[in-house]
Length: 97
Image (cartoon, rainbow, N blue to C red; front, side, top):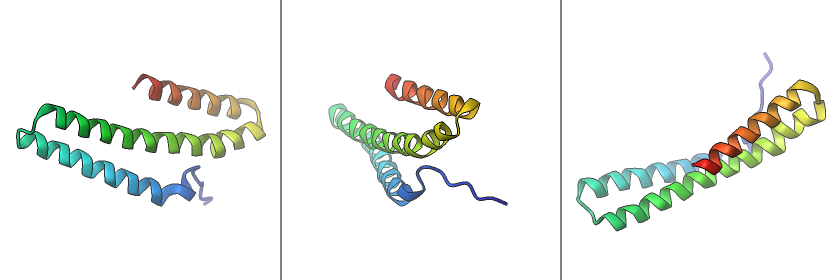
């Protein structure tokens, strides 16, 4: 059985580290709410966690474009069209969030 490599394969450990950091930030935010921390301080931490996740999303998107979309574009045809459509939709979701 052929093993498919995702575009983020080379960055996987860095992405996992960033996600673990964001997970810790979210747990910290929950703790702040439990402890009745001042709302502006909580919002500051929400902003930091959001930025951390946006950084992961942009890294994944960059890897997807450089690997999956570029490979599909070289192949051409409907596969290329589908990968470009997927990337466009992912960008749209990121921009709207």
